[in-house]
Image (cartoon, rainbow over all chains, first blue to last red; front, side, top):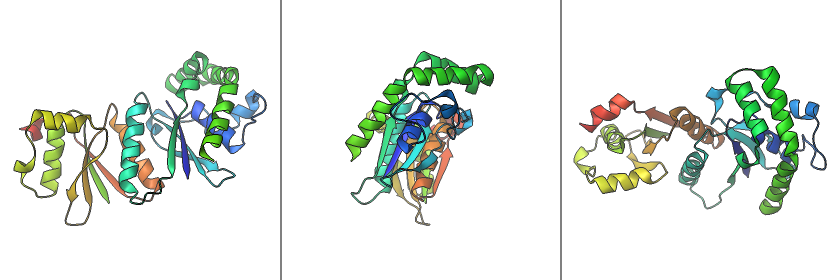
Amino acid sequence: MKIIYSCFGGAHSSIVTASIHMGYLPVDRVATKEEILSVPFYDKAANSEIGIPFHMGVDQQCRAIYIMGMGHSRDFYTEMLYAFYNDMMYSNKKDVIFINVTSLLNNYTRLGGFMSRRLNIVGLGRPLTVYGIQRNYRFFTELVKNVEQTIN
Amino acid sequence: MKIIYAYKKNIYAALKAAYLHLKLQEDGISRSKEALEKMHHQIKPHYIGLDENLNEVYVANYGRKKEIFNNVIKGLGNMYEEEVEIINLTKEEEQDLFQ
């Protein structure tokens, strides 16, 4: 099975959620700034990479975990992807799930992400994204727990 | 391989390109505005046919950003080892093919 966490740019919220799922970040407490910044791909995706799925690893149940940015039209592209996937897979065994995590974002992360990724003010934007992620961290962990319970 | 003719607004132009690719008579494309609009609003790649090299030919609306469409579709194709070629129609091509 493949689980694809999607967000706007594929640089912050989807990366953090996938990292919690993979066990790179803790579930039982708020991750520190250093832990968040050391996660692979965190605050790295360029604009031209929006839409490209990045492989984050394989979880304990052998499910491949990916992250993907989808820009403003997440609903459109998610529907298009499911339709394309159904067309590609001739068997009834469907094994992909897209999870949109954008709703977990707050304005700190939005602003920080915009500054870092769009305006290239990384020194100011990146710490702001981390602060925003830490403030909403419990929502990310709850989502991952929910996903794991639902899929198992 | 899957070949997708991707358009933004003019599905008729994409259908015409796909029909030309498949060497089909373009009379077969519906001119009914309602039928084309219905097809346009369905968010999925529409299968049109199989060409002489056994490539599956589709038309699809690329939405707001063709770069994102290309990345997500090719990305999913790569994940499942499915070769995908996307031909994005430009605004001018959409107008020309509509004639």
